[in-house]
Image 1 (cartoon, one colour):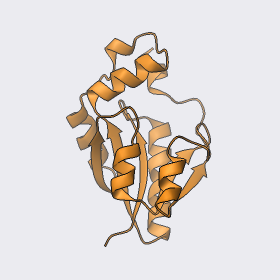
Image 2 (tube, rainbow, N blue to C red):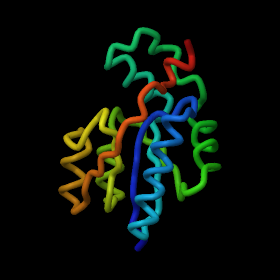
Image 3 (tube, one colour):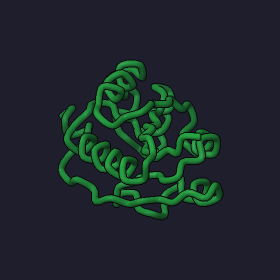
Image 4 (cartoon, rainbow, N blue to C red):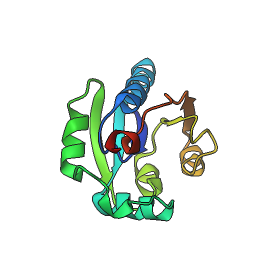
Length: 141
């Protein structure tokens, strides 16, 4: 069985913050002799999530459809696979995949919504610094 490291997000318009996160997660995977798997929200899930968190222009997101986002991520070095999830959170897919490590930025921290399912399955959360100043919203503006 292949051990995996996971990260999750919308990854709508790839920017330096995304590149940093993916590079760090890829390094963690390599160090742990694991494969990096990225979990991305479906288009419907992005809209629902943005609406839930009070994003003003939630109906305009995502900019890129899920297939474009997936293909863009698969082109990056160190990415083993990309899975699409339709729920608001990746909890169900994480419970199925049972990653060894789930990487989050300090923006969400070690006490993230994924923590319980990761630890239940014997994995751990690794928190990396958040690369400040980069966001898809800022790029759109």
